[in-house]
Image (cartoon, rainbow, N blue to C red; front, side, top):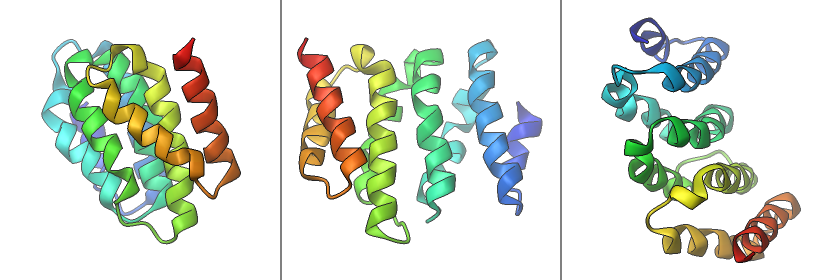
Length: 145
């Protein structure tokens, strides 16, 4: 894990993105809780201003939340910030919000404070991006049943 965590500082974005995916996959076998120690460093990348980098964090968050239940509250807290993090355009934000809805869906049953997540998703029913709006509608229909 330490080897890959050091690669998060790489100037090469492709290395960084692949590293994020590898670290997320390693959480499945992280019996020494090494990821827990680097949680903040990993999620700091959410605020770097890049849609692709933030997207890798968000895309992996559902998996991490399932592998690391003790971090679910903190992961949820980080994901709820995507409406306000710096991104190049509003369209980038809308794409990331759609990814966030998918991440929440992966571990929604285990989320303690579901109301905040439901409010976040309901706000997206008016999202200008069709795909994000559709993800919000699908998510809400799924949790209602």
